[in-house]
Image 1 (cartoon, helix red, strand yellow):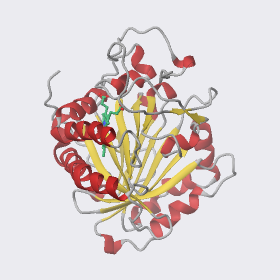
Image 2 (cartoon, rainbow, N blue to C red):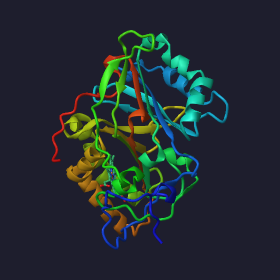
Image 3 (cartoon, rainbow, N blue to C red):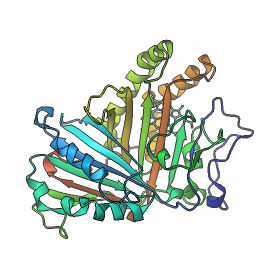
Image 4 (cartoon, rainbow, N blue to C red):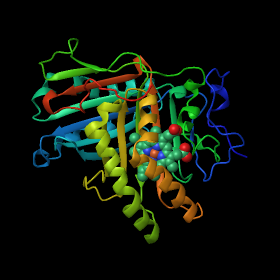
Length: 362
Ligand code: HEM
């Protein structure tokens, strides 16, 4: 029996119809994270340090952030965190901790108790000699969805889950992401307003500290790939047929995404949290889009993702759905008050939240 992705307590009468084909039977299984009913929001935060070149990174910045993760009482510390790095389009090294909390209260408690908040707000951050950024997403659970190609161990926000679902119905067709989002039952979740950057006045600052005001229905995707456990034939298939196409698609979004409603995209490596080496065979695309429609548009119109999507169907069929490649994504469609973007060292800081030149059919 296939499960409906939207949990019972978040279901309501639809004014926006689903795209699920009649009598739909997905060609391969997929699962989603199920959170305790009493959890109504979660927090995902990216704590990033940015260096004009990797030789300038002596490890101090990321060690400081890592120390904060274990500070504060156990009830407010993050449920899960990991370290990732990427060289961005300007060639700068970005190294970040990505962490998750089961709601605003524990995150706010941790910010205070660990001392992170006062440390972050200190003017000293402006003279650390490199860029910093803090990106905090705190969606209510009706504005969040996950998909996993496996049901064995959790990734990202699923570390907060009560359990993984059974096989679900709403996947493997265009429009399924929207159908999995509870908020989209009666809301077209179109962007309202545009992202813009401004100097921060409420924090003692020089001009290097910038806060980026997001906007209603900004959409963020973290889409992960883990081929560390693949058997040799499957590894070859993934590395030769899918990974190069993924890189091409991510490079397009990174370099030209602003033409189709993507503010920023980077393909990160999850790195060893002790040595920071990128030898884990795990990557993820972290992208910021004007709204879900912009993300959907890229996924179904750009040849790279069409090839990946179609390739995956063949790949799963060939392996009789016995996949050892692990794919997941988590998608956030944020209300105005559910996003916070701060950066210090503006020249080399954060991704380029620039004006979009949206050029896609309505
Ligand atoms: C959906 C494959 C990377 C964006 C899907 C689906 C597959 C797929 C099979 C259908 C999922 C389902 O509902 O069962 C892959 C593979 C990837 C990859 C194999 C990497 C190797 C990405 C990345 C992005 C992305 C990095 C982000 C920019 C999307 C979107 C959908 C989707 C937006 C939903 C489309 C809709 O619901 O209409 N992908 N994908 N994918 N993927 Fe990917």
